[in-house]
Image (cartoon, rainbow, N blue to C red; front, top):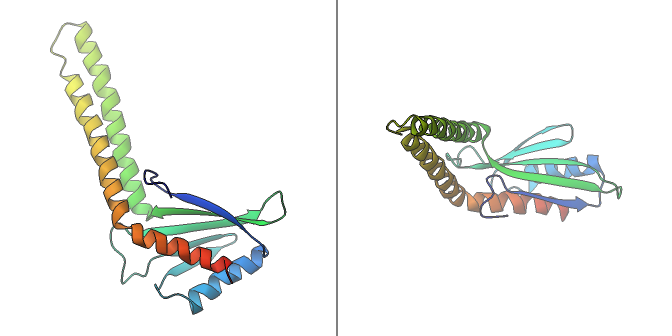
Amino acid sequence: MSELDFRPRFKFEVGCGKEAFAERIKVQLRLNNPHGFRGKTRHEHFLIRVDPKQKHFWSPTLDVSWEINENQKVEVRCLVAPEASIWTMFMFFYVVAGFGTLIGLMIGSSQLTLDTNPWGFWLAAASFLLGIILFFVAQFGKSLAKEEMLELKSFIMGVCDQ
């Protein structure tokens, strides 16, 4: 998993069928689950979450989907991400920072052409700085959740070892 990815992804192939893989996940959650992960399934999609008793603001979820690839094997795609509400909040603030930067640059450029005080560039700089700060906050949060992310990854890889 890359250190800079907001939502790290990985994929692998399994030798069993789609239904057998889904059943393996359910069995693993019931019988071999020392971390107390919780899971929900819908069709060919599984969402695995950290135990609510151990969950914190930065706790990740593992989004697992699978399908038959061109080699007629089951390809499993995994996405490790924060809870949807946390991800949405960060994306909202990134959009605000990006929009503020764009508006600040437009206002500053207009003010520069009109030979007035170009304070719009300060808005652009502050918004850009907000975006950079958000990036580092997200990386800090990801570092706090790294152990849980690795536990989720080893859990899903353990399903394949059955």
